[in-house]
Image (cartoon, rainbow, N blue to C red; front, side, top):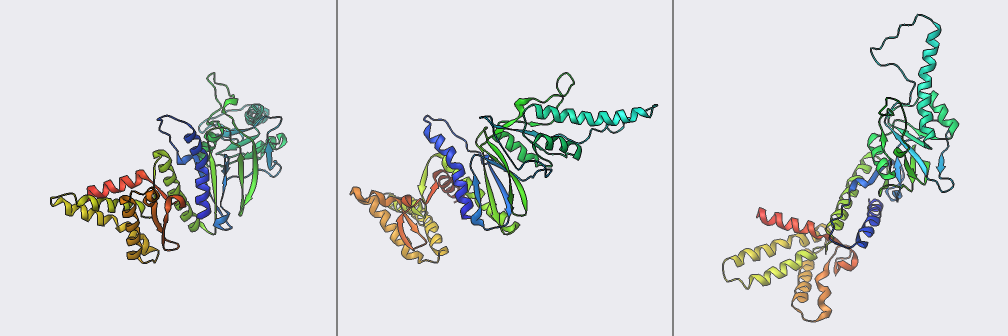
Length: 369
């Protein structure tokens, strides 16, 4: 899931830059729900891509006569109506009986049922909607009006996806059109805004891509893979990497990875243990040895010589902590390079970990011991 991880980092990057630009002691939150992850069969995992500032929804046009692309005109954004109501021909509720004496009235009742739905659609169109998404059904009678108006309509959309899209586009999901007076109306403030909407063929089906959402920050990562098992595994790996980025951005502190922090702590604690004149010295020495399990395990998993690599790593950290030469200051960032089997500056290499995760791991391990 390499490409997916990169896409995840890029998705978080804009929010991070905004937060870093501000000063003060505010605690910033980076909700993972702002990144919508969509899985699509087909192609390689390297074809996974990020829709920056956009949203992808697993739905398609309800009729072939509808346009495949809608964009803003004269500087006006595209308005999106997100509905949780049925756009099918109105029917009387269960248990309602109508006794008709004149057969001619039956046709009037049927006509009125069609007119009720027509009026609802007319109110949605008059509010300025050019894209209509609903969680329920839309029958052929209603589709005719949308086709004539040149509107993209998609039915049976996922409710959770619509909620995310509403947040991303600055709109609201409409569950009813009834107002306080008992009449029906559609509030234009419920419409979301974006730059354009396009139907794109992905794999075996189509998806609607919403570009340039005008609401809160939102991004979508479209994962590509051969089958469902691969996509699920990529999704889990991407979620883990996003959680790491989220932790680092929220704590705003990091440490070099590759066993650098553990090796530095081990060398420091061994030196400190020599200053203790009681039996606690043994405990601190054992704690220092236990910390070396991390770099040793990393080396073994990479099929490298663990003893030699860990010895070199400890030697460099010991030199960095005891040397008074300013040129040796960067030795505290030295960690394992498991690809080449050497020691390198992991801070420059970009191998880092959130400091808060490292602190919590050490705290829990200490309490357990």
